[in-house]
Length: 231
Image (cartoon, rainbow, N blue to C red):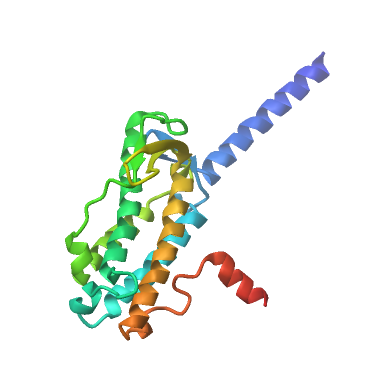
């Protein structure tokens, strides 16, 4: 009996010591009613690692922004291609619209109070404004991309698990259908979608004689780049 009591006391002390060490090593950082713990330096919480899907989105936006910044004037930016009947500015605006439609839902998810299952939040990618200033003026596009990247950089892994629904138009008659998804999955969709529009931007730039404004791997899917590296 005394031996059992001694062992119980020993384990209680061990657990207490472990808890104390964990509190020192992993302080809690609270955010929007949720908490996460990260290793600290000198008592200050460190920023968690950036999710891979966020890094991918930022890379694609950097490529797009490089073109916006490098073009000599707005005339080239808004000139329509004879091949696609669309402009570089039009594809920039279109791509940013998708990201912004998605990220606007982030606040609805947080308001809902249920992070992992918030079926009341609906992202409507097809509800977009066309012919905006982003489509015709490089300075406006450059600012919009900066704002979008700042927003993306605040996303953490837990944010990406936020549940939502997406509505897509199925045909030109306006009929739509909804699908269950989550923020991280939809962020990848927006990123993959932007990659393809970056390629169209590249094609238009080539037709207009300004291909040098485009980074070499712009518009290339990660699997294409990976395959080229293997060969």
